[in-house]
Length: 514
Image 1 (tube, rainbow, N blue to C red):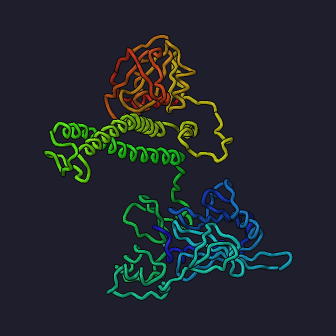
Image 2: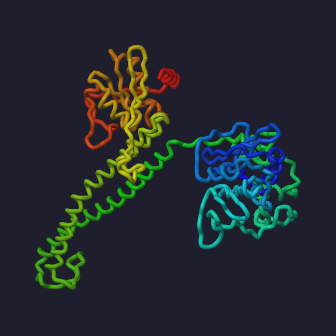
Image 3: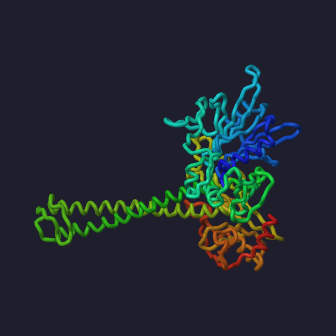
């Protein structure tokens, strides 16, 4: 569950037991997590303020994240809070607003009171560094014409709400859970369901820190229906959530998906325009019919047979208009057909890139910067700052006297085709589907080598989950590049096809030798 106001109340109560009157030794940043190293009475505590939308919270941890990132806001926290004393932590009403109250000694002004206010509100989570009611700095800045100005030097103001403090909660058997959440500040929908069902007061519930193993959410008591784990402290439950690792491929996947969307939209538009152009070709027959009709070509008629005409102009003018449409249609087709072919070709390339991206590991993920650079990926404003060429890493497996080279993406495949492949090597690729190029260097293509090569081609392909997977193979001398396309697209001759099932144990043993 998300951190609601009642959960926040109990969490602050627990944190104060450990961090009241502790000295701020240092502050650092890891992603969206600010970490405070606090020290008092020969004990060191690490307090995490997590601004990640899915894990918004603050808690103590015994395994703090490493010092990884920097920012201007972090520099301000270090400047204004390091060396100060965290007196206590308080809550604004019963809202998801946590106030860290510091006393920092200034050489000129003496003791100075400062606040770090944490609005723990999911994707709207924010941090404010406050002195005498003014914002020194904040994590997310925003200027609006009306409402709160989220900028340095502005006067800080809390969110306005007409809800009652949850401390004033009174059980009403006629109220619905939605009525409760609308009336009281800090009570979530799920807690409201529980309160209405049991008749309890939110501040009379016994604290039992719980983590749902199914949905990776924690709460101050067991409110879950699924498999759970109990803890002694709320911080332990919060710290035990599995933090989702950053998906390093997401930036590339997003770019490729956007390109495919653009191409699909263009494909639809071109197809529609091509259909209209083909319809315009029919106008030649209409013009011919006018001249063959036997009517006086100077006449102005509304129609001839089933052809609707413009009766404001002569038959000759109508015929010429149809002929002009015919010529426009021919010119449009001459232009649109190559454009449509180009779009379909690019769609095929990007659909292949999607598969290659999934096959690529994080170690060689930087290949995609070069693969996608011609399409405008992370285009530099300064054209001098071009992507730096890096050494191509191709997965290479050696078994006895046979070597298997595996090209997982267009960059690696180009290296196989241009730099590694020899005429007597063998080339393997899953048939009629995206997948890796497998180059095999062996003195003899034995049955074992043949099946192993085919299994690797099937495993590193989009058909991995299938059975009896068809794999083409031929001598490398019969493999050639297709002009204007990435090296993942090749022409082959004299190929044969083998059908293979993947034996996961065999593949795992092979990859262990990489």
